[in-house]
Image (cartoon, rainbow, N blue to C red; front, side, top):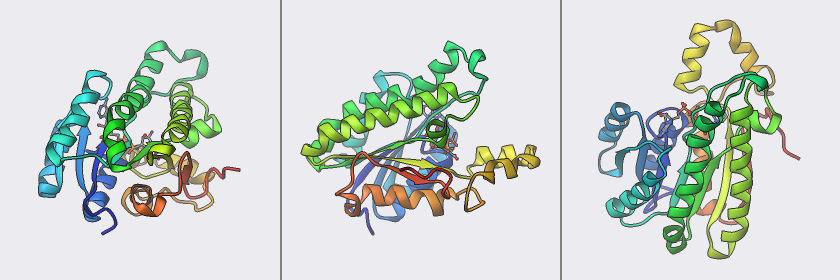
Amino acid sequence: MRLEGKVAIVTGGAGGIGKAIVQAYVDEGAKVLLVDVNEEAGRDFAANLGDAAHFLAADLSVEANAAIIVNTAVEHFGKLDVLVNNAHASRQAPFVETSMADFDLSFGTGFWPVFWLMREAHPHLLQTKGSVINFASGAGLRGNVTQAAYAAAKEAVRGLSRVAANEWAADGINVNLISPLALTEGVANFIAAHPEQEKTLTKGTPMKRLGDPRNDIAPVAVFLASADAQYMTGQTLMTDGGSVMLR
Ligand SMILES: NC(=O)c1ccc[n+]([C@@H]2O[C@H](COP(=O)([O-])OP(=O)(O)OC[C@H]3O[C@@H](n4cnc5c(N)ncnc54)[C@H](O)[C@@H]3O)[C@@H](O)[C@H]2O)c1
């Protein structure tokens, strides 16, 4: 059990990659506070995991919720070792049609909550010499068409993560990112509705398949939360079948 005794927060833990990370963390011995706006899915999932998981229904885009989330984890499980900022909602639009509302949605769910939660979590991570795991995207690294609001927020998260990695290294806190490519429920529904799009999704991927959230993405989140990653910080781990190769 690689995460025995650790306490983690996973945002967006009721679905997709976040849900797979919650399952993997519990399987590896961690206690997890999962946070999501999807109350029904979050409650059902946490109930299946027993005492190892606790669900908090909260909208990350509300700044005041960051303190509530961190305090809930610490009150319920006694401390905080790992913060996984996974949730991110966005809408696609051609560049010139991208609206302030699109930016507000993307930054409001995928950038500001990352900053707020890292700020709230810092005193607790200081005590445990903990870890932050944030999420990047090939859409940001490549600059995918129609993804201005999403790509900008994702690259902003990478910049923020590098600053924290530099500032907090002396505190013993590491900050890394995962840039995934995964067949989540949302992507599976999209492929079911548009089967011709599947090839487009995997075309630029050397491994020619989309990752499995539990088997391909979550193990990297386990690694980054574990002592095995203690000498790594400020890094983006491309967990995308080779789609983007950083140099
Ligand atoms: N799936 C991929 O292939 C892929 C590719 C690149 C990057 N990513 C990134 O990986 C992470 C997870 O992606 P995913 O595909 O599993 O996402 P998803 O959309 O399937 O799941 C996100 C979860 O976040 C929750 N959520 C959304 N807005 C919220 C809010 N305001 N407050 C609380 N919870 C909220 C949703 O209810 C959902 O359970 C995201 O940061 C995403 O940008 C995913």
